[in-house]
Image (cartoon, rainbow, N blue to C red; front, side):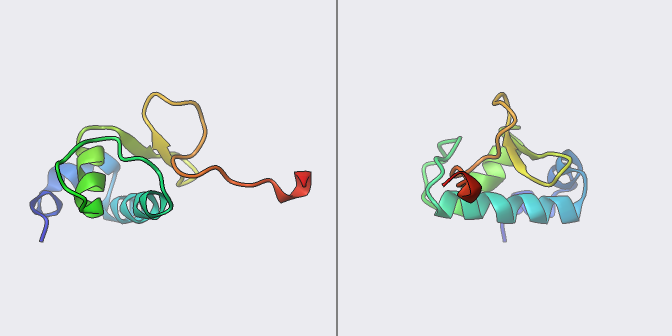
Length: 87
Protein backbone atom coordinates (compact mmCIF):
# COMPACT_ATOMS: atom_id res chain seq x y z
CA UNK A 1 0.00 0.00 0.00
CA UNK A 2 1.09 3.54 -0.60
CA UNK A 3 2.49 4.93 2.65
CA UNK A 4 0.99 8.42 2.22
CA UNK A 5 -2.51 6.92 2.18
CA UNK A 6 -1.95 5.43 5.64
CA UNK A 7 -1.40 8.88 7.14
CA UNK A 8 -4.20 11.18 8.26
CA UNK A 9 -2.32 14.20 6.88
CA UNK A 10 -3.44 13.58 3.29
CA UNK A 11 -7.03 12.90 4.41
CA UNK A 12 -7.11 16.14 6.40
CA UNK A 13 -5.49 18.09 3.56
CA UNK A 14 -8.32 17.16 1.19
CA UNK A 15 -11.16 17.28 3.71
CA UNK A 16 -12.03 13.65 4.27
CA UNK A 17 -11.70 10.17 2.87
CA UNK A 18 -14.58 10.52 0.42
CA UNK A 19 -13.11 13.70 -1.06
CA UNK A 20 -9.67 12.10 -1.20
CA UNK A 21 -11.06 9.11 -3.09
CA UNK A 22 -12.95 11.37 -5.48
CA UNK A 23 -9.91 13.56 -6.12
CA UNK A 24 -7.65 10.57 -6.77
CA UNK A 25 -10.12 8.92 -9.13
CA UNK A 26 -10.84 12.06 -11.13
CA UNK A 27 -7.17 13.01 -11.44
CA UNK A 28 -6.26 9.47 -12.54
CA UNK A 29 -8.89 9.72 -15.27
CA UNK A 30 -7.41 13.04 -16.41
CA UNK A 31 -3.87 11.61 -16.47
CA UNK A 32 -5.04 8.55 -18.38
CA UNK A 33 -6.68 10.84 -20.95
CA UNK A 34 -3.42 12.69 -21.49
CA UNK A 35 -3.22 15.45 -18.88
CA UNK A 36 0.35 16.28 -17.97
CA UNK A 37 1.70 15.43 -14.51
CA UNK A 38 2.32 18.45 -12.28
CA UNK A 39 5.19 16.82 -10.38
CA UNK A 40 8.19 14.69 -11.29
CA UNK A 41 8.35 11.63 -9.05
CA UNK A 42 10.77 9.66 -11.20
CA UNK A 43 8.15 7.04 -11.93
CA UNK A 44 5.34 6.38 -14.39
CA UNK A 45 3.09 5.14 -11.57
CA UNK A 46 0.10 7.44 -11.95
CA UNK A 47 -1.21 6.87 -8.42
CA UNK A 48 2.16 8.02 -7.03
CA UNK A 49 1.98 11.10 -9.26
CA UNK A 50 -1.52 11.95 -8.00
CA UNK A 51 -0.56 11.42 -4.34
CA UNK A 52 2.43 13.73 -4.74
CA UNK A 53 0.33 16.33 -6.55
CA UNK A 54 -2.01 16.34 -3.55
CA UNK A 55 0.78 16.37 -0.95
CA UNK A 56 2.53 19.26 -2.73
CA UNK A 57 -0.73 21.24 -2.95
CA UNK A 58 -0.85 21.18 -6.74
CA UNK A 59 -4.48 19.98 -7.09
CA UNK A 60 -7.71 20.17 -5.11
CA UNK A 61 -11.46 19.59 -5.44
CA UNK A 62 -13.60 22.68 -5.91
CA UNK A 63 -17.08 23.08 -4.44
CA UNK A 64 -18.59 21.23 -7.41
CA UNK A 65 -16.18 18.27 -7.00
CA UNK A 66 -14.10 19.20 -10.04
CA UNK A 67 -10.35 18.74 -9.95
CA UNK A 68 -8.59 22.09 -10.05
CA UNK A 69 -4.94 22.98 -10.48
CA UNK A 70 -3.62 25.51 -7.97
CA UNK A 71 -2.88 28.83 -9.63
CA UNK A 72 -4.93 28.26 -12.76
CA UNK A 73 -8.18 29.88 -13.71
CA UNK A 74 -11.48 28.18 -13.03
CA UNK A 75 -11.18 25.48 -15.65
CA UNK A 76 -11.06 21.82 -14.58
CA UNK A 77 -7.77 19.93 -14.63
CA UNK A 78 -7.74 17.56 -17.55
CA UNK A 79 -8.54 17.47 -21.23
CA UNK A 80 -10.83 20.22 -22.49
CA UNK A 81 -14.49 19.40 -22.71
CA UNK A 82 -16.28 19.75 -26.03
CA UNK A 83 -19.31 22.01 -26.31
CA UNK A 84 -21.54 19.91 -28.54
CA UNK A 85 -24.17 22.65 -28.66
CA UNK A 86 -21.69 24.92 -30.43
CA UNK A 87 -21.01 22.41 -33.21
